[in-house]
Image (cartoon, rainbow, N blue to C red):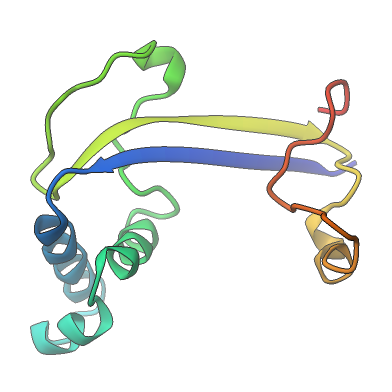
Length: 124
């Protein structure tokens, strides 16, 4: 049996400069030998910042983000000190996905296969 877990998380970037600053600070916190100058070279834009924050938070961009069931469409309208406004996240679990990740190399040979797409209804 293979269980696939797909997670989707969304945040609004309210202040890109604060997001970049938070990511640089996270890099220095995670690696005390890294200088602020080195962190600035690693994180030059919001895309780099998102990657650094996901790594820093162990796979989540904004750990305080509530699930969509918890938010029920509610928007906070505020920005955290890191410049992000968490919107929500969802998870999808699929049992015996037709193209599991262990076959990732071969799945890219399948025309139009999206490894992030959920299986058809009834398969998960």
